[in-house]
Length: 283
Image (tube, rainbow, N blue to C red):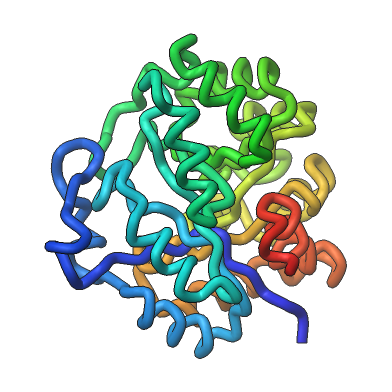
């Protein structure tokens, strides 16, 4: 059976004294409050779904830049997890914090600029104050995943060009509009990113659901996506439990959406691209 790696699950502790809440945006996300999943519960869910390893993504809408729970999970289960941390990249000590979390065993960084507790796209993505953090990401071989809206595509493109050593991974494929269907003219800005070799796309439940709206179908969209980017720049992430549904169901949604692709392409999306982004997952 092919190895499956999930690069976008979240964990929430059941101990708020040891892991206090400090959400980005000032209020906790609804999903982390109403359907939290602990480290131990995540392992059970992974086993049930047949997922070998995961890159746990910091729940910024619960813990902000305190990545302690993710780091502790990675330390306790290094054979199952690596982690993706968050820091304030505008702070002068950002490179120091990045080295600290990498030394704690975390393999990537996430910038949260838009989402459930941050309804408006933030304007700081290409702020020169963040340049030292991006330089540090290149030096430390840390990929950066971005939670952003399409409004930030120009800023993201400028940063990807300025820091070509940094692998930039776009959460939810940067939320393109797909409902017009083939040839997906409304997603032109997404396909234009294929010319940037260090830009990768994360395929999540949102991606698969959007590919079923209007005139879009998974059978027409994902082969086009692979033809433009190559499967080696696409990776699957469950977004569990932020996305509703059990982990096996979210995996099934992804697998059923990609049946038009070759076995080799699916292997990249469900495993090999993750190992490229986070080499510790290949061990």
